[in-house]
Image (cartoon, rainbow, N blue to C red; front, side, top):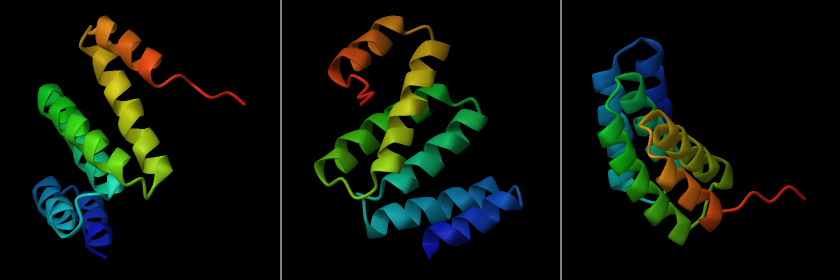
Length: 105
């Protein structure tokens, strides 16, 4: 319910209120990957790439231990890969691809 409220705030372009609600959702359950995804998306939109990357690292580490939402976890990896590419951190991108190869089956 808190995530939904954050989504409504974000629809109204109130990113501060949306972030507060998404962080509140994380405080209630730190293993919800969707919270990390939504917060990192806001950071990327604000061009806060380093902050987004640090936050994604934490989110992936915490949500992989208790995978509740594989689609949102996949989104975290996707955004992190985009940031590695955008920030010209190609070595990190290649390392990630080696650690988490695509399963095309």
